[in-house]
Amino acid sequence: MKRNVLLIGLAFGAIVSMQTSCVTVQEQKPKLTLQERLDSARVWYSVGKDDLLKALDGRAEFETAIKELKKAYGYTMAKDTTGQLDTLRKNIALDLAYAFLKNKRVDSSEYYYRAVISMDSTDPRGWQGLGFLYGIVKEDYVKAEEFYKKALELSPDNPDILFGLAKVYEKAGREEDAEKLYKEALQRNPDNPALNKSYGDFLFEKGKYVEAIEYLEKAYEKRSDNKDLLKTLVDAYLKARKEGADVDLEKALPYATKLIELADTTEKYKYYLKRAKLYEKLGKKKEAIADYEKALELNPNAKALKVRLAYLYDDLGNAAMAEKLAKEVVNDKEIEARYRAPAWALLGDIRQRRAIALYKKKKYEQAVSMFDSAIAAYQQAAVLGTGSIKTYAQRQLDRVKKWRKKAWRKWKRID
Image (cartoon, rainbow, N blue to C red; front, side, top):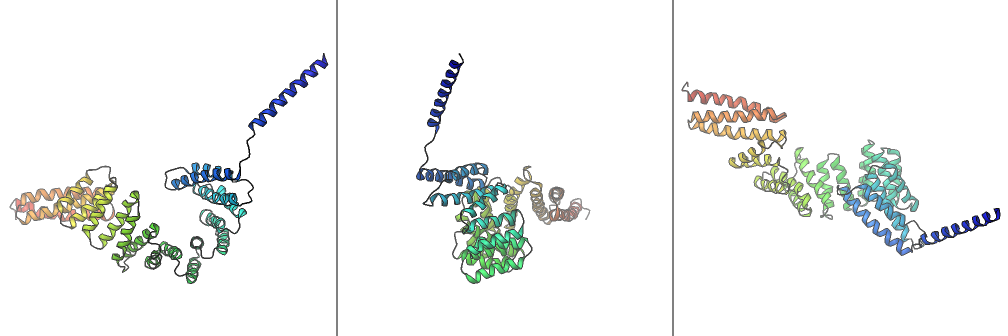
């Protein structure tokens, strides 16, 4: 009996063993060929890269891009005597590091930057990534300088690396070192557009707008289609003028126009605003109105622009259009009080002028009524406004009340 049980047990064990063996054989996946790995990695890399770019402007999630990039990275994990997988894996690792950094997962970002260095210590991008991570994110300026300097050894005139190290020096309070770094690089390569742009950006951030213009314009000579460069250049002109510098804003107009031409539909709105500001400062009010109206057409939700338009129309003597726009603003409760206040002040100005004109025509009763309307507008401006608008409205209230008193006395034949 025991022998039979033993035989049955052995037989059952053999059956189970055979079934397990069969399952293993059936489930065992064939090894991927090099080409299959490359194709799969490239497809997932392309998808992940696309979602990473979308995530940068809010059209996708960084987590989605990270998952896709990690899948691409997994396909590159195999020996390859041709070096194709190694090259692809390094590029994917760089994008993974950047994606993790943008997703505020610093440790994972550092892991992949160091992976790049392990794969190829002569590639400056891994060292540069660590320099940024330690300098800008972790604020460990000693280590950041070490990493950036290693990157510079490998790519001495790389403008991005120079700019990164300069920013580290700047954040560490070593502005002279940052300035020296750029000047040395430009001495070696004075016509390099990327270097000129980076130094121009540096000067711009330091508030040296006039100096920045010189280098940005030099960069523009060879990089006329660079939107970021054009934006900084236009802003440098506007900020320099605001600070009282004697810069020729006419020279900035072609840059602003080029910026509009290069921009996609979603960007054009803000660039029309920039050109409108240039036109305003140049006293070209009709052109400024055209750009503000174009901006409003592109972005109907920017209702506060109607305030600027109303003032410009009033400056041109078109009080009817100015009043129409100002009324639209003051009656729209969705518009913030800080914009409705100046609109009320403008209505006060328009009504005050009309009242004074009526007074001069000896239409005193009508003048009193119009002065009352002006007073009501200025009172609203004083209630809603702050700072200079509030002060202006209160000052005008005192003035209008004096005028009203004079008109009332004339009307009642007291005077």
